[in-house]
Length: 246
Image (cartoon, rainbow, N blue to C red):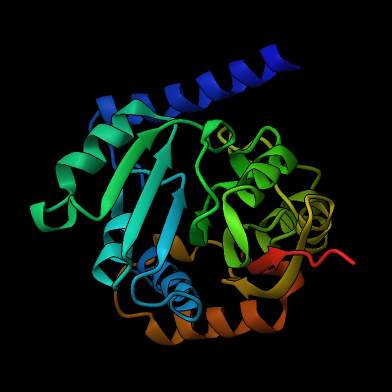
């Protein structure tokens, strides 16, 4: 199993390194993706506070870490296992934020620290984890009883996947180790010693990422559907804490 895990971690780093080397955009910056990202950031703001110590797991090029620092975080530790991302993140970070953000090239399972983080953010990370329970158990050692862990991941039963299954096909990104339904995500968090405080659907209609500007009403409908039909939503946002013992 250890060998399989190492192979998976290396394949993940290679997948994104190729995109970086080719100069391709790794993250979608279109209007729909920007709207979805904005909803996630609003979700985070419900739980963060000035001076918070935040762990950003899977930081990519550091865009979220920079945003967290600009929003008043006192300290941000940003982890990513792809060296190219860490290099890019450091190069994109303004000088006035360098004393707030520490970039570390490692998997979350290998990171060690005192339990001092108030907030942990995991955007587009859970679907890449080879051992999600081990990752969450590691995170549990980095936080206190009052800390909050915020997760955003794709929904295995999102409408697009459901439609593909009806015609006997499956479309899952080669970069994803496993995708989860809301129920499956809740179960694995509980097995890792966490209690889910809040879970919200994010996005709904397939194909909107191809649209450019001028579709704000359709995007708004998409958000409403995701929130009200979470079982088929495109993504899942969850807030959880360490479960109380006894």
